[in-house]
Structure formats: structure tokens, C-alpha cells
Length: 144
Image 1 (cartoon, rainbow, N blue to C red):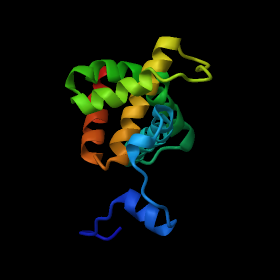
Image 2 (cartoon, one colour):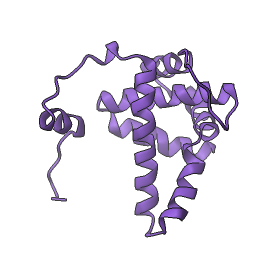
Image 3 (cartoon, rainbow, N blue to C red):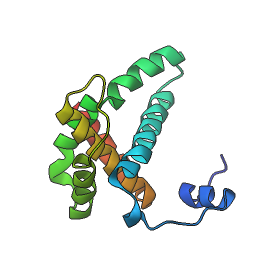
């Protein structure tokens, strides 16, 4: 990667795929959770890979413990007092959303709380608040 070159990832994707920007307020909380789940997992994978070159099976084992619903629920419960009003609103919209399925290995409470966490991550990502997103994840990992 070239040093000194910065481009917003979302803008790059929109440009390359000729996508029209969408008002984030029109997204359902489950759509925010969908993208937030992927972004959170990518951040965790990036952190693990940057910590050292491990076999993929070992990387998967480490990451799966951090991306499961119970871990995400513990993170957001620890972070909740630190959220802004906007962030809390994004989290609560996701937490309270009517999901049409449940997690295989999580309680309903943890699953809904984790969905709220993922919605918050999606909201932060789509609004370009990357530093805040990464900061919350870093702090949140201490609660697992």
C-alpha cells in the first residue's frame, strides 16, 4: 500500500461499482447489523493477522471466540455507558429489531444484544466513523 494515500473505502466501492449513495436512515436495523457483522469480523481478522503469521485454523479458532454473539453482547454491555445518543439509538434499533431466526449457540438475550452491537458497527461504518468504531472495538474487547 502506498504511504500517504488515503481514500474512504465506501467512496471507493461506490465509485468502482457505480453505486448511488443511499441515506443511511432508510436502512433497516437488520441491514445495519448485516454489514456491521462483516465489518466487525474483518477488523478482528485484521488484528489477529497483524499480531503474527499463524495457521488459518488457529486464526479461525481465535476469531470465532471474539465474533460469537456472547462475546459481542459482553462487549456492548460494557460499552453502553460510553455511547453517544446517536450510537445508543443505532444500538437499540438493532437490539429491538424483529429477527426471523435465532442463533444456534446463543441465548435469545445475547443474540438480540449482539444484533444491536452489529447494527451499531454497521452504522459507524456506513457513516464513515472508522476511528470511533475501532476505538469502541478495542475498548470492548476488554469486556470479553
